[in-house]
Image 1 (cartoon, one colour):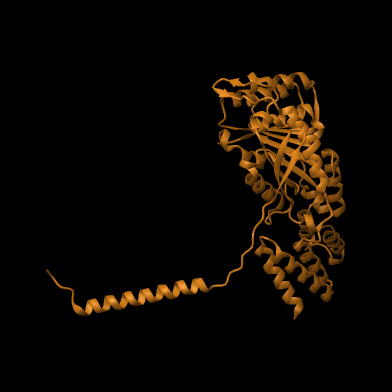
Image 2: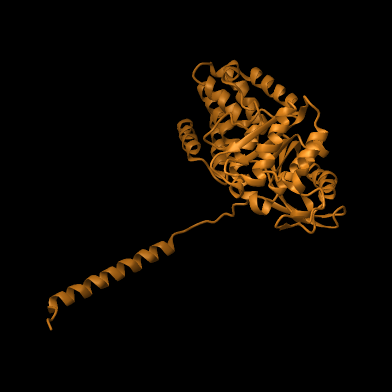
Length: 406
């Protein structure tokens, strides 16, 4: 048997010792790094007792960014089946209405109310149909009571405790069935309805009979109806949605509704994309056309006055539309013309770091350095305090502050 030379043994031991010492020092350095922690809160859970249903009901409320710093009212998005779809709804709504990379976004900021349901087979079905092929629904038929709870307990609680303006109901599968049922029974309860892959097959396609009997020919829906279906959904869903309610509404030449087909997904994977697309379909004409942005603030206000009249509730000029307007005018107008816009912007959205940044920039161009410095300081402080500060804005804010500080 060959022997390892002694000098190689010494070299290996020395290498192992150094490697161990290095790893030990690396670990020690990592342990010694200072770190601060902060809880990221995505909502508040509430529980109320329902006298109508005879039990406790819970829901999660998420407020739009900047809600606490404004006096504005916001639409409310009610999403059923929160235990499955709260995070999906939160993500879709945040991206569409608050993404920092986008201005002139396609939907308004909204209060999200994600409803945690008790017995969905009972609460979302209007008729008692305990046997449906291989499926069993022994508790079915409680939708009327659940709708009364939504109308007389849930909605009033939200409207009394938050600044609300208009509301949207969204539900998937049996939740979509309840959404459609509510649209037919109490259309004025919500301003828009998003029925995601609704179970209109229920009780031998009974909901299609409701629609045929209650929707007149040539109907013009005051409350917008959006119906979605996954392109890979066939069977009972496909027969009752794309093959049922869609041709029925077309036959009646109804107006104020839209069908959205989600490519490449089946029933269980429709909700996220359906909420994303369905929200945009529920707010037609929300974004300001470029030609109106080019005309200035008065045209923008006229746009949202017309949008509000069409939706049936007040819609604010969004924070990001002020940003789009000011950025569009930045290089082509005198700062004195833009200052009244940034002044209104900061007054309307006092918690908007971007508003204070542009307000400071206009003062800087007007050689009012003291006011510019105060605005930039406020912008930096507000942006740093956000749960997710945006470096695309924070870095130029710091640069502008440094410029006027010297």
